[in-house]
Amino acid sequence: MPKPLSLPGPGCRFRPVMPSAAVQETIDVASLRVGMYVHLDLGWLQHPFPLSSFRINSEEQIATIRSLGLKRVRWSSAQSEAESPAPATVAPVEPPKTEPSAEELARREHRRRLAAERAGLLQCERQFAEASRELKKAMDLLPSRPLEAARRPSPWPAAWPRR
Image 1: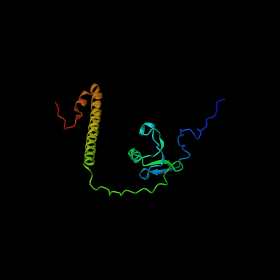
Image 2: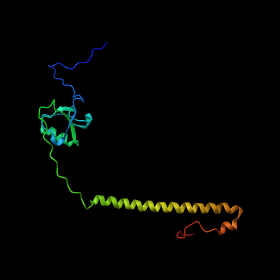
Image 3: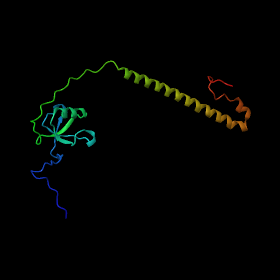
Image 4: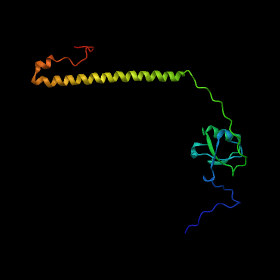
């Protein structure tokens, strides 16, 4: 029978990864400080740190965590050397823009052009379907009643040139 796994003794430098059950607190990345023990909920290749759980040792590490685009991170107060975080400062909210940007105007124009093109295509498809139905009727009449088929109105719209 295999021997059960045990945690390393006090003299061992190995430190196990922070268990997820011990981490119940989350903190805004704006409130991070040196000495906090954090856990990044990212894949190993999505951040530059050797481990996903570690104690923050410098302001550079804090800046790197902020640059990852995370809003909040998990942290362990029991494993941290810093006291509880100070409340995060709230950035002032900008009033909504009243004028659309040049990019937004270009998108609107593009959508308008696409809608006009779709409408034109639908009209073309309807005219083609109508012309096909009329042509089929004329072709069906041709063998049995050729004179009647010749007198049928043209399936082509009046705007189309005739040869």
